[in-house]
Length: 612
Image (cartoon, rainbow, N blue to C red; front, side, top):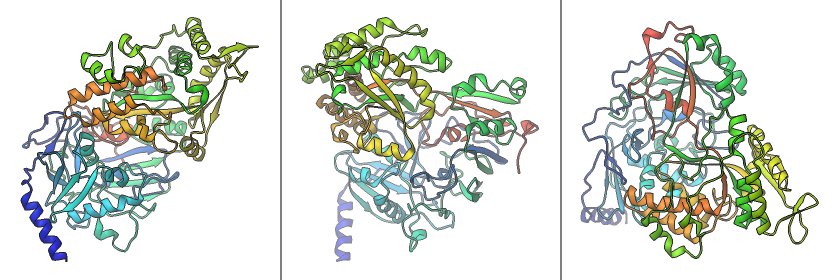
């Protein structure tokens, strides 16, 4: 029986078109880097190797499996121990190049993706990486529902996963391959089948350090510290995608549970680089002698790879009082973004007036002819203002109560049947308008309490509910909130995530990130259109039309766009001339910053120095 199956597989492959393997692929634009490229433009192929880098983390060292569990996420820096099949370039919108794989080919009908592994690819124990490892890894994802790329997601579009030989495999799509299917290959984790034979589930949370294949390996760890060492005989060191990267011999992560303690430790030179996520300290608390003398440097970087609304207040449209879009619009108008930005954020934030803010996918002005053509079949189901008005929110002076806007909000509430009675907003049945805003972030209190005060001016009895971690999971899944502070930012381009955040398929509780319960035929149509278009131009038209429908539906109160990364570092590093990482890397801000940096011997005489 096995022989018959093998012969049938062989004959099917022979009858199929012969794959024409390429070094990289993009379905949305031409590749920037040709097959003979030597390194990415944002790396320095002559960067020296050496030195010991120390960084900070807030996460205790509890897990090396790569799985996410309750309060037990992967150890910081673990991504450096394992390569992926492909790597996404940092200076292109949608291009992937071979890493574990040295070839990729897509059939003419876009239904079959051929992948060829690099014959030099090795695990750290010297064993070759084969298609058996890839197949094992695919099957292992079955129980790992919290993976960055889960088997449930892969199975939703993968019809079959076929091994041709030790180096080649083919993935058959249920429909046709899209941009985001290819990007999934850059996050799909490959595990060593021979290592886990008899060891059980590779995604079981564990402190056992697994076998890797990446540029670093774990050299030591305890609960409050993990150290990685560069693998000297790393098999992919000289690949074009790696030249000029992974330049530090050792990378240490020290655990600091409290940000204030971490800042003080950094200023004392106990670690080398710090990403500042609290704008108050960026503007007010770093005026120290080392910064004034230039021994300590500040810098920022806008990561174009992340777009959308970094923070947004989501309306639960299952709540009776929030089903009316006029009510949602009134509550949106009541949020004085300019005041909180001036008083609380040092005017550092930009408001996200689009679901794709920071990209060319954001709707601006009136819809184009192409957008109108897409929206026309739904004209009697969507707001007419989509066709006649550019979307905008009022801009206040930032000096206090915005009476004109609040008057407009009162009128919208009155039109929806809510009027002030004895100082309280009530409906025709005499029921008061009560509202609970939920968040797990203690820092958000200072942003949301002034908003609650504004709602009080409208007669709304609003309160803030601060959630613990376990509560947050339940409240989100069961939609036990009226409004919820959520991150609605996307990897650019965002087509892979649109259905998960906005489609009717995920409108039910616990189903996905569509926390507001959006269920709109026009939204569903535009999502499919954006996902299935063959080029970026037509995808952009669909995204802009989708943006308009969502914005005029007032499903969220948009707050700020993704912020630029703010970081401080001791002046001891060399940096590439073209030090830009706009679209690449799934890792944290620290990783994006230091991925192509190196220690500059001429600067090592700083007070911190190299730690050996």
